[in-house]
Length: 79
Length: 326
Image (cartoon, rainbow over all chains, first blue to last red; front, side, top):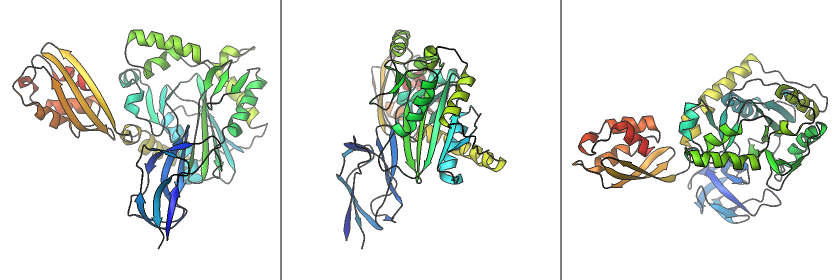
């Protein structure tokens, strides 16, 4: 099964976040709880952990991109 | 909440202390509080481009330290006339909340009759002038909130190390900073010194509690290692910079020259040279020598020295050329 990874909403005012850095690359195996990427919103850097275990199949953004809340950032194949 | 007395003024050590508590020590208490200060330092946001943020020459000449934070936000200047506070809280906040940490700081200032307020940009202000910047990170299951407090900071130095070396821009900058930024000590009805301020703020924030954790020799050993290996390293402070483009232009007796450089992770990844310079050398030799070089003066000088520039450039020496490039 494929699961989408979306930009989380970390604050009431938050509309977008900057994907600051990837900790995993496309094709890599990820475990639930591992840090997938870091995002930066107004003065806050947050690690975002994977909610799934599987293979990071596709990534749609690169470091430095500003992404809307809920937009799909990547796909994890959990099979 | 437990307090850690930290009298180190070394920014590398102080950031290493926060990092150590989050990633290694993990004290049983829900919250750790530290109140600390630094020698003159430029603190860069985690994902900022260090080279673009600071006047590196001025910082070097004046012994101002440069260190990247693990939190977001912009570059700030700190010195012995100011204080930093850190709250390290177990658990990740569901939503970003600055009030929770800034509230107790405002309370402490109110006890000193300082009319401090929180504005919409997560800054603390007195009569609309900023005296504190705040930033956070969520790391390893912890929320770190830290902020600065300008108490008696040297604004002239602040402006000089954050702006380009131009007398007119600097004097304008100082004027504009004084209109927007303020020191807490200017708003005290009863003057107190920097250390008394610390004592009163810590007492207020700790709400009279004397719960304290004393760092052990083993703690200090690890913190010093992290300071050295991570926070004082070139890779962390400069190497992590995002890719950027820079154009540098120079005039000299032989003509005019322009360098267009791509800098990626602190190293020159591409270089094109334009100009009406005079010489017989293939300019590609110089650009090829520069590609792969670390973007700082020393490395650039070394790279240029390996090329026989006398053939390529009329009346220009290595130092002058390096000054143009970096």
